[in-house]
Amino acid sequence: MQPFRNHSVLPLCVFLFSVLMLNVSLQAEEPSQTNPLQIATFQCDITPPIGSPLCYGHVSPAKEIVDPLSARGIIFLNAGKPIVLLALDWVGANNGTQDVWKERLASALETTMDRCTIHCLHQHDTPGVDISTNDLLEQNGLKEVMYDTAYVEDVMQRTIAAAKESLSHPQSVTHVGTGKAKVAQFASNRRILGTDGKVKIVRFSSSRNPAAIAAPEGTIDPYVRVLSLWNKDEPLVVLSYYATHPQSYYGKGGVSCDTVGLARAIHEKQTPGTLHIHFNGAGGNIGAGKYNNGAPKNRPLLAQRLADGMKQAWDSTKKSPLTANDVDWKVKPVLLPLRDTLDEATLTGILQNPRAKLTDRIRAARDLNYLQRTTAGKTIDLTRLQLGSAQIIHMPGELFVEYQLAAQKLAPNDFICMAAYGDQGPGYIGTTIAYSQGGYETGRVSRTAPEVEATLMLALKELVGTKD
Image (tube, rainbow, N blue to C red; front, top):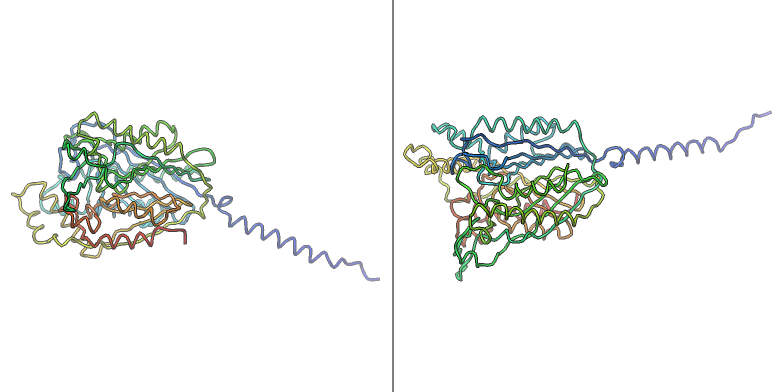
């Protein structure tokens, strides 16, 4: 007698096993369950000691501490190698400073230099740091004239240590929040044109000129944009972006985080326990000159106006789910066209001349360093971080606001934020037409040629868009 055999048992087992394995496989690929997006945030006090040079040594050294300065950063985890965004209360971190910061951050956080961004808020009563230019100055007998080297080394060590320590307590992200609001009576375009199409008045960040005050705001981006990351209903970090020169008054030795730093602090108090990181947008040709006459009392007033805009943007925040799969990072190295007025022999002569004004020698060293780096083919990374339907674009120089507005038009359905004032080696970066219009920004303080617009717009078109 043959034993009884159920021929359907084996196929059924195979089927059930296959379904089980498929389910396991799908779960392994689902980032929200096994590989969630995480962030780590950090901050560090970077207030310089009394006596430190400020603003690249072009203004009075630090005589008093009006407001503390800080370094604030965020690290994105589980979306490839770590992505690092760092904002500094410095007027600039240029040329070789970018190289050193990124190399050290990448080494400490086990990532690559092209996944690190360093941006400054550009307050003028703060240190301006350019390590490779400082090397040129020291070679010509000018030591400690641009910044306090011991202070800068200490800032780097402590900030990077704080970044590394933050990795021990990462936070899971489930949502991204976006909101924007207009900022009333702060920003105005600095370049007021005459009937001939040339710059007639430069309004700068403060003005007592009745014609400058009466003139319209001009081309600006009136919105402050607030991007937040959440773990369900808990806000973890706030990133804000606003395009303007931040200074209300400066140059007398009072170290200050100025209008943008004060606004950041006001909003941070309104969201206790949530770190607020602010970035300066493309504000190269934007300042507060229409609404600021340089009186010290205007600093808190301007700060409050920006803080009010931040609160309105925060209150209008809309949240959407975010996973590691919704994060994308793009890098576009660019070699910016050089201004034809930069002459190596002339600049070297000024730098080496002990009878020349100190500020002229410092400026010559800055020009010379950027000229030599660019001539040698040293590129600058433009980067884009996509977080779902939000995109953050990281740009160099004192960038004109037109680039920020252009980026928004490239992806009109996305929430576009721009951080300028990355590597400020190029100085001011205008539009092609701006160079023919004259004015301060496209004069000797710009190290790029008019063709820079074509270079940057081509790069922006490659960067801004949906995830590949």
